[in-house]
Amino acid sequence: MSRKKLVRFEHNRLSENVLEPGKELYESVKGNWRKLYFRNDQPIVVEVGCGRGEYTVGLARHYPHVNFIGIDRKGDRIAQGSLAAQESGLTNVAFLRTDAFRLLDFFGKNEVNELWITFPDPQLRISQSKNRLTDPRFLRLYREMLADEGVLHLKTDHDIFFDFSIETLSANGFHDLITTRDLYASEMNNLHLGIKTKYEEIFTRKGFSIKYLKCKKTAY
Image (cartoon, rainbow, N blue to C red; front, side, top):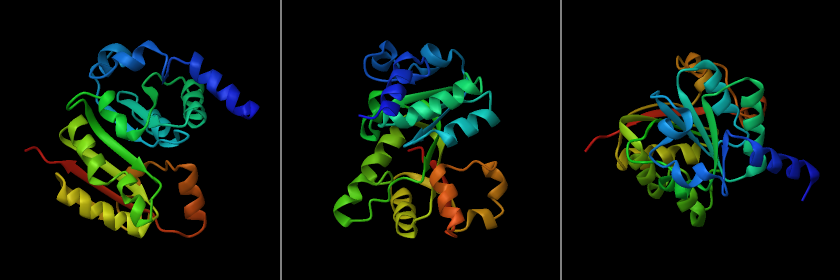
């Protein structure tokens, strides 16, 4: 293991804004994020697969009265987001180290107001499609944790994954889909505040158009 990773893992161990195995809140925070971690009643926004946390931290800077949680299974990634949040003095940010399929171990029913998925691995092989973050098995988790009419956002550069996501969201309890296949040439561009992930910067420099969709959880 590289020295850089060891330093980042130690950072996570010592940082209050990182919840990971071995920490008390990791086992008790489900359904209690506002009470036990943020200590307020503000809305909660979750980014699934947050990577280095660019989007989580960027949104938290713009919306200081909203609570943001970045989720990723890689500790060396979220350490970078954790540090960025600390350096900016942000107290409305947390990072959770876990796999996406375990979301309901950490979030109660209707606890989350919005959810972001930014540039996930498209898992383009048919045999890997069940691992796409908009596969129905994940959408069931999102529906459980999202409040009624809770919002889901998706950004990607992959047409195949984007088309798959539109289909699965429409068929699995989400409505009012708004989509664009070229975000930065659309009227929705201003809604994104200039925040870009590392991968988004790479894709846009290479000339790829960015696809975006927004939808709401249907209340049954």
